[in-house]
Image (tube, rainbow, N blue to C red):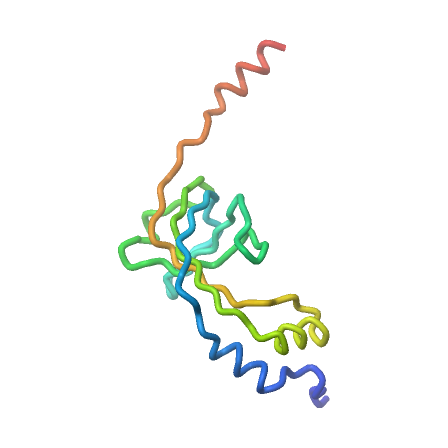
Length: 134
C-alpha cells in the first residue's frame, strides 16, 4: 500500500523545525524526580511538580558532563537547576501543525540539567503517629 501524501509534513515545515534558532537560555529551578536514564545519549526523563512554559511536567534533559548518571536515583525527590532553551516557531508553521496535525506547538524547547540536589522528604513516622492517635 502506498503512503498517503496528506500524512507527510511539508518540507518548509520540517526545514523551519530543524533549523530553529534558540534564544538565550533561561535558568530555571524545579523539584521532581527522575523517571528514566538514557546512558548512550547522556539524558534523563524527569517529572517536575510544576510545569515548564509549554505546560509539560515530563521533560527530557541533556545532562552536563560533571554529573554522573550512575550517581543518580530514580524516584527520589531532587531539586533540579536547568537551562530552558526556546526557539519560537512562525505563525504559519504553528497554524499548519494545529490545523493539519492537531498539534498545538508554538515553540521548540530543549532542556539542559546543570545541577541537582537530593531533597530530604518527610519521613513516614509522622504518618504512623497520626494513625495511632485515631
